[in-house]
Amino acid sequence: MTAEEGDHSEQSRLLSSAADGQDSSYSACSEPGDGAAQPGEGGPPAPLSREQRLLLACLCAGSLLGGCLVALMIPFFPVEAARRGVSETVTGAVFSCFAATQLLTYPAVGRAVPRLGVTRSYSAGLLLAALSTAAFGLLPLIADTTAFIAACFVTRAVEAVATCFINTASLTVVAHRFPGRTNTAIGTIETMTGVGVSLGPAVGGGLYRLAGYGLPFYALGGLLAAAAAVTGALMPSVAPPERRAGPLWPLVRVLLTTGEAWLCCLVLLAVSMNWTAIDPGIGPYVLSAVGVSPSELGLFFLGATGTFCVFSLAWGRLHDRVRNTYLLVTPCLLGAAGGLLLMAPSPLLPLPPSRWLLGVGMTLKELCQGGAYIPIFSRLLMACTRGGLDSSVHTQAFVSSAFWTVFSVGNVVGPTVGGALIDRWSFPVLTTALAGFSVLAAAASGAQALRIQLALNREPVVRRETEADRPDGDQTARRSEEG
Image (cartoon, rainbow, N blue to C red; front, side, top):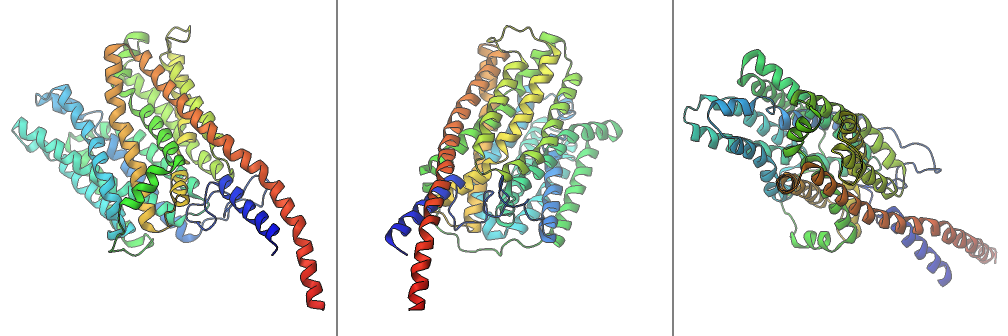
């Protein structure tokens, strides 16, 4: 190869790496173009293997039950706590400690999963969730109110630790076993999570009315235990346990010094805050502004969450088929901002509050949130591998835990900031602030989309120049052989 050919080849490789957003040697979390179909290139992605389908079925079962676990006690626990003389502030803290515990636990779980084994960690998380959920059903047997409150906090925190193992192991499996189909797998899992979150309150409330406080927890605990047994027996092994973990600081250093990793964290933070910051104030606001009762508001949430579930799989498949995923993330963030502006509506819009604006805003937000959220894990993982990390299970588990840690930050900060803004100003001011933060994330995403697209537009030129040089080299080689 001539020096000029070498320059062309290296330039083409660098442009392709910049455009695809990954190192060519890494395939465990590849973009379309490395194992998946691209627009105008090849056919659709290869069908899932039997092992992949079995893995995905196990992950979907856990995600469905995990979603139920998060939302199961929303309809009836505040009522039961009020009967015991527990204040609304303490009841809210019981719910909030779930996200706070996750925030503190995810970093440690990211280190523990490779040592325990990925599939073993997943099954153990399901089993721990089963035990803690069943234990929650026994809490009314505690007569002392203070002891009852303490037990609620402890049990809810154990549930949070269990979900940390489930979620971290789940994304590690996706990263390790679904090359080229990462976003499709995540979209499928998120669909099942959304279904669980939607069904949890309805099922929990129905079982509570049927047989009292304990039955919802016993039923879900039994299902979680069955899922733990089934996944432990049938779930294919992803990777053997690695007893010796490398140092943590190199992983953290790459994460903190990679520009695209910061962009992914910004987008993820915006999305998670959009989901949780409105929780403290939307109920009282819509009741006073447009007369929407709590039961009616539940129907609005059901419709919006249903939209997210329906479109999550489509978003995942679409992201797997485009090379520049930020071209989709950017308008989705802007769409989510538009939905937030319409919900209240914003003081910036000359519109009076109404039920249809509330419904359209909530549905638009959920529709677009999925398109912005689903590809972020794969982008974060690729950014870290381009920064110098290898494609081992340790790296994948670390990035998975980092992803969920940032998401938990949004879950903790969102309601806190949301409540403060509502107390200081109003609910419409909160939704306007959230929309502004989403626009900021969209601007950063748009800049990255432009950078990648410019690299993609230059890539065919470099390839044509390289291909134009190759025949001369081939001809010279043939002449040498003939001589």
